[in-house]
Length: 468
Image (tube, rainbow, N blue to C red):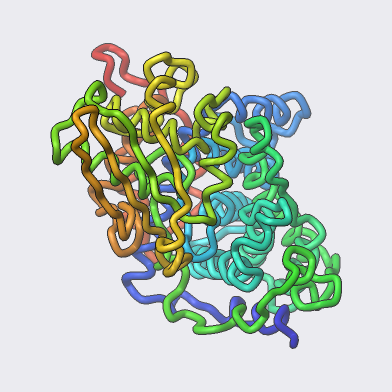
């Protein structure tokens, strides 16, 4: 009982001193990843309507930056635009245990909130840590598959609650203020999975709306607006609305052992997390055996049951994606581009590749199977298996226990920096990119977070030599 108040108390009491050096470094690591994906996402077609909405509505009057542009707006709309953009390239961070994307929501809300009230890294780091924990603890308490089965996007529904806590902590609200922020956010938590039907861009919007809702909830709470004090555990509360059977005891279980920022995975491939392990396996076999696409007869992908309906079914649609969003959720497409191009980055997830006859021919050779043996350790682990059979009859198999980017198989700081530079290269000069990297890595307890609204502005590129 009283899960809402107990969780709010834990968050309110969390301080910078409670975080280890490793956890503080992890906040910086995740921040840099977020900044890269949000900047690149600002170039996507789905981001332009949000930019136009801000400009055409006269909302370009605030201090909060729309990352990747020179637009500055009111915080709630910056959170909306940045959250939507960051979720667009399908390269934002993810937690396996909860099957959702925390950073795209939490950082969008936090950087926007830093433009409402002066905030240093001392306040920012615990607010980020708490936001990640709230999002993931609620998802685990629901059971990660339950919202999906009901047609809800967990990043959207749980993200709104986490964003509200992060924003409330950034604004310096007390425990009651955090409770009210959660209560208000509970009336905004939403996000439909129906985008899977036709590749609509609302998946991206779900993350942005969650960040937007969190900011609005905290701002209203700061003004004295109230929310239900039992928004999590109540009869009509969060835990009952999105799952037929939830587990409230998980909300506070093993608090800080470790914090969820330490359980967060970084994506190296530009697609749904359920595709990451299989793509790792395909790339490994192709490299180790020095295979060519023309030699391949078929590819069999062993997959987790939880992700099968997202990226493997219905087969006739997955082998004929009609948009980039469709391709991001097509396992056959991910396999085909990995085989043909040796990678599955943003350069492969394009409409040109989606329409390529060569890619389409290879997609037909990909078969996905739900392997019950792989599910035994899910969701703590997301294993996958790959078998490539050649026209000669020779076959090669690989099982991926831990996809690249997972905490047990992480991207190093150097690899993360390479990813960041790749993502921001169309937008920022090399000098600007280096300045951001240095600023993030050198954050100290007294560093002002509002500085990011200046150093993240889009800068002219040095096109003389074709080098950003």
